Length: 249
Image 1 (tube, rainbow, N blue to C red):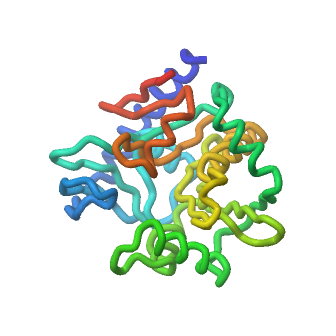
Image 2: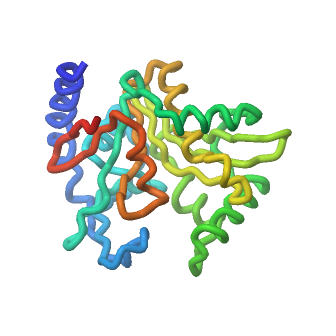
């Protein structure tokens, strides 16, 4: 399996190098305060794109890039290297006891996949999540959907989780033939005891297995940020560093 994976990554790296040579002039660097609360300046190296082919998006993901609205970016922070792109290979994954417990705890949750949309119900839940978890100025649900989730460059969808019809969580995902990109997940803070973040990743893994998708991208792993560090519990996983994916068992 690892020989096949290595060949895939080498092929992607070669194609991406040629792709990047054609679009590198579109990228700019933007310095802002760290969005994850670390005491460093964050440097986003990003470009805005029109609709991309499914393969082009796959190449960017395989090179550690992330999506924000119609922008693709990677982090080039001058004094910090905490953000590490993380990827799962669903057919290799083996759940631990806590992950199995999260699934069992949420057996009453109903899951549905639908087109990505910003209706009143989703905005209200997202707003509640942001107020409780990230109460920063100008941090609001409408802005997240307008600037972050909705886009015109890839196929995106939402996975909604309900209990007795009540919306308790929403995952925003991008979907390709051979990859699934987890863009964001928000949930009802009053249901924090359910471990819905872990439960959501377990459902994404199951979807990948059902759809025969080989690569599940989970965004960034940041060991010092609890909201991001729990991803490291999904093993084996792969971290992107110095231009290559490295397996962590």
